[in-house]
Image (tube, rainbow, N blue to C red; front, side, top):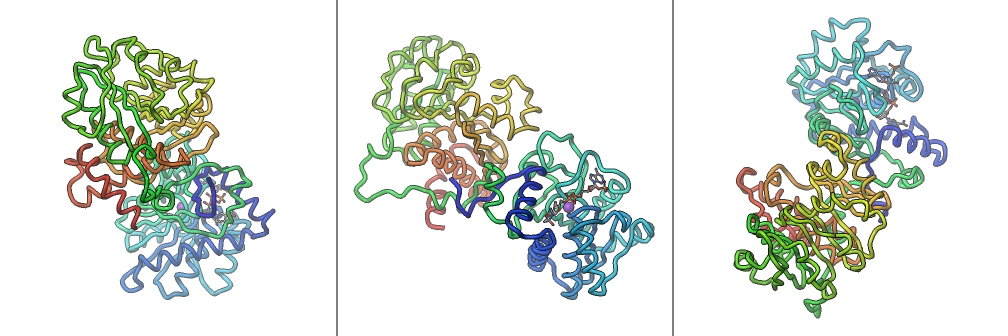
Length: 516
Ligand SMILES: NC(=O)C1=CN([C@@H]2O[C@H](COP(=O)(O)OP(=O)(O)OC[C@H]3O[C@@H](n4cnc5c(N)ncnc54)[C@H](OP(=O)(O)O)[C@@H]3O)[C@@H](O)[C@H]2O)[C@@H](O)CC1
Ligand SMILES: [K+]
């Protein structure tokens, strides 16, 4: 993948490497980057803050995040906004480019308040501001906030002002795995150039509020040369890569898929997966299921063909998969509603199959018992779609550990087991065995319901079979799934949106992306 349109995801250390490369190898100075950062944020503030009636506080800390604040403050003052600048650390702590911009600010005739010298005046004025621009701390924060930062942050969080953080909500770490920290709770964060990992990890993500990304002129080569392979996947990427059908295409060219699963207790999951595959444009879809539930599934998915598998106790019999010939199919999705009563040798069954295999739900439970076998990889692409609970079972970690380390745990699992991992949740992360990762930006809590995962599985199967670049197929399915749910909650409350609603919305979701 790649190209100029990529938006990257970084840790604090990675961002420092990228900054260093940009300064030392590309030749754009830190003063220039800071000027760009301040200008980019200022022009975005102009779209959000009216000069009349607003009183703005720019809050400045020790490091370069504070340096951005001197640029923003200067520009706000020169544009006629009623603006106060308060600097929290003593003057002598401000160094480097931040000191450079503090000097520019002063030479332009502007003055700032010193929290160290007059904290009582600061606290007295704090409730009077309509907007607070938070430039206290950025990616350089380490550990829990020290005094007086913690007190200032708490006081800001108690105000009724609109808080806009620059790059990061101050106090929040940039990377996963760091201990939970209490920082600024922003209404909006204007991220500089590249979102940080915690933008997408809860509980940190809540502190960012709404977020947007401001380009500060760091070139793509700085990211590539720093080895960054984590990306944000947004709408424009999907619009660019949706496959277009030729007028004379026949059904066989759009993929022949097989959906395997279902049990007496859970026939609906299989219907959802099948219908989602059909609504995602699969050419032909066959359902393989325990023979005693076939009527329940066929009633719902008239377009699918059926293969009956031997049934035992309402689930596919332990040797039931052996009878199934995979040669007619380009891809298989296995697991929805499958049940857990029996054991199957999934690796042995799929090893030499050249098509894509998508494993979800109960299929992941079966997979967890034979993980060692998968480390050698198989002939075709394997995709797993765990939610954090399933990822915890697969890795032997707790759900909390998975949630705290979504990037590293999914990356490592994908590498070790030669699979594409689609770790679901708010901001689903897709990881390849080669170490590339994409964060999905569509979706909402309406999807946190039974059946959503079954729908995604069918969509991924169908989408992979229609894309020449299979990873793009997966990423597009993940995006469109969330996009359909986003469209639905414009019209109705998220509580009442079901997985079936999402399936029915898919034609509209695809249409809106194909003809934006
Ligand atoms: N590099 C560039 O070219 C560009 C960078 N840019 C901007 O720079 C930001 C990163 O800058 P940075 O590295 O200076 O980090 P930043 O967070 O501002 O300050 C760190 C300092 O804070 C302190 N401190 C740390 N932990 C603390 C704690 N728990 N509690 C209290 N204090 C704590 C500690 O200082 P100390 O108090 O120890 O002297 C530490 O040194 C980045 O987010 C972006 O906004 C843009 O301008 C574009 C160009
Ligand atoms: K900040």
